[in-house]
Figure 1 (cartoon, rainbow, N blue to C red):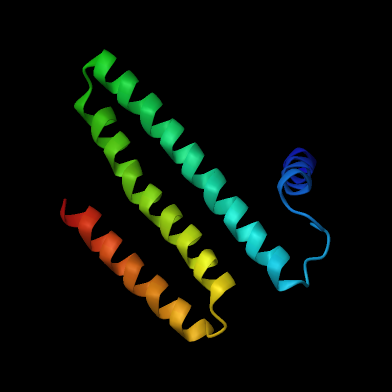
Figure 2 (cartoon, rainbow, N blue to C red):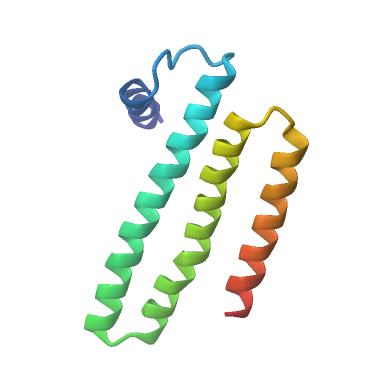
Length: 113
């Protein structure tokens, strides 16, 4: 567990100014954006690896699992958009509504696709 804590602290110190000031709204927004972008990058990398390996092995299930990762990618994108909207708008109700609607649309799309 100490390794993950050190990794989190290192990443936060690289990308977030005043990363120790967690009571500052702007710092918390930066934490959310950092988490969202890391999730997007990791999900895209995993998608590419699974797709290549699935195609090389001729495994339909691995290729299908790679495409399933796109639903996780949609959630990460919604996370980043939500934090960007939170940074701009002062009314949290509007941001929550847009986030919930976006999540429902993305969830419905990827469940029926």
